[in-house]
Length: 99
Image (cartoon, rainbow, N blue to C red; front, side, top):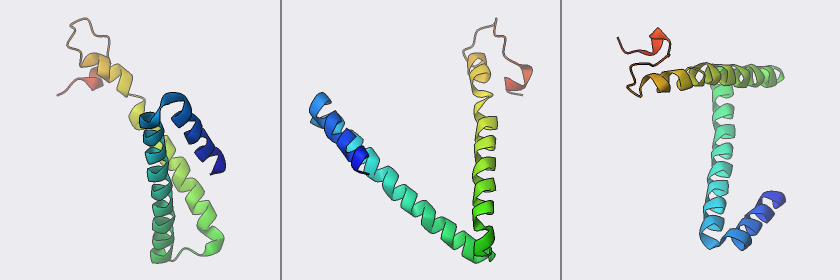
């Protein structure tokens, strides 16, 4: 946390108060969202009755699968975005075209 705030001070000093405030605002928002995530994990684990001995394993596989699914949704983006430019010479896969 000290390093992040020191970096924010550097941004403020080097790039001005507006960018420094933007960095600090983003940092505070991300920190509050991470605390919110911990609360959500505790509620879900409690509601599903997951014993503490298995919580690390469930969290690990949940995060890993979320990253893989996110990658599966992001990967088709570049070819599909080139298909939406309207050029008739697009080399995008056929599954990118609207039906």
